[in-house]
Image (cartoon, rainbow, N blue to C red; front, side, top):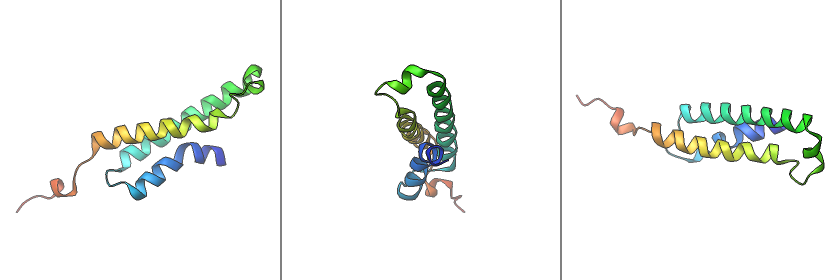
Length: 90
């Protein structure tokens, strides 16, 4: 459970707290993408014996946060709207 949360929720939580352009769409999709990738990599590594014996073992936990960061940044910058733009002038 720790690996799944680390791989999928660390980046959205951190950027959601500290980055002005963070939004719900970016958080949702980055969590979904990185969680799916983490589970897929775990299945691949578990079924492939050559991965367990190589020096690449353990990257299934480290790659999804990078994917989460890239997807969060891309989606957040594309969907960001300033609070001032959303206010209707009367």
